[in-house]
Image (cartoon, rainbow, N blue to C red; front, side, top):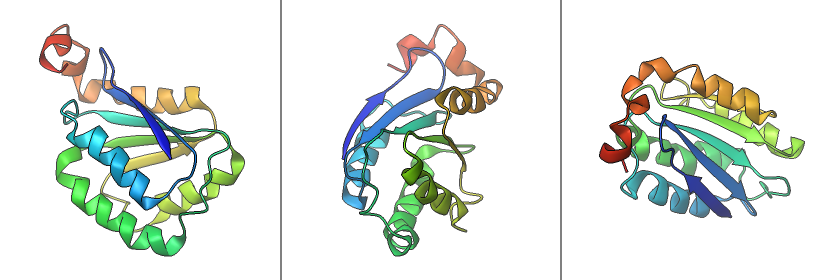
Length: 146
């Protein structure tokens, strides 16, 4: 899996674009860069797009319940409270995997996440939480959070 991470100049929406083969090891690599790379701050939310042509066959229900569950628990403290993720599936065959992940009992209550096919709707959903973290929209963000 390849990934691109774009941190915002203002606002609290970090954009991630995934492509290629999706598996647990590559998600761990993504998480290392995203959450431990020095730019992540409590109050940020994530807009993840799974690019057209990505291969989700390396992830199954058992792996979601085990390895991915461990990842959720490991990252809980780092991501902070009220964490939101909007997932966009550019291909319809990825959507069932995302919906399965969303339905896992250990995901519910740990963070909010929604699955979309339309990136504009995904962004609008995340932007509806802007008032929760107004400091991300002040001029000081560019100096204090870069």
